[in-house]
Image 1 (cartoon, helix red, strand yellow):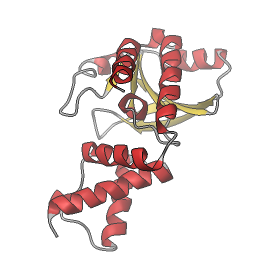
Image 2 (cartoon, rainbow, N blue to C red):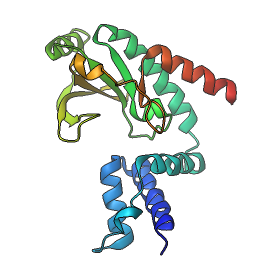
Image 3 (cartoon, rainbow, N blue to C red):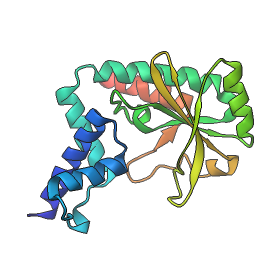
Image 4 (cartoon, rainbow, N blue to C red):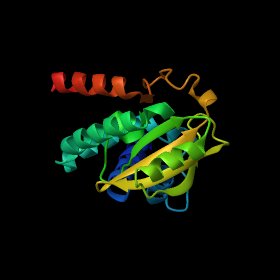
Length: 198
């Protein structure tokens, strides 16, 4: 079977797993490969990249999730509120809310760049936020993990990943698929642009 066709099929399966099961991209790719190939494995060059999965996810949500547009708008508005609340910690929004691909399970993911992670925790506690501490992969280095704070706010999952200020260098540089994160002003501009196009 042609590698391009395999790649498209795996991307479609992975997108469905992300939308319906709340899997992250890496887990969805692995599970998609198991579903398609059982105990075998797909050709190495047939694994879809995240951009292809995003395309498949956009198509899946357009077809099967009539509440998607409303969910994107709601979570983006809430992201703007939290970007303003946490402004002193240099927050950037990333992930599903930034891309406009918000499944039911997707959190509002903010990356904070501050030299005292304890100050961030204290700020949340002062706001009455009951958070759980975990770790997530570093957005730039596959060999590193960073502290993350997760909580539910008004029935919406929010994830804060905590970085040192030095990690901000180059964070806003656009890659092949465009920028991967943005500040509050950039998110508002993106929302206005998408609204004028619709």
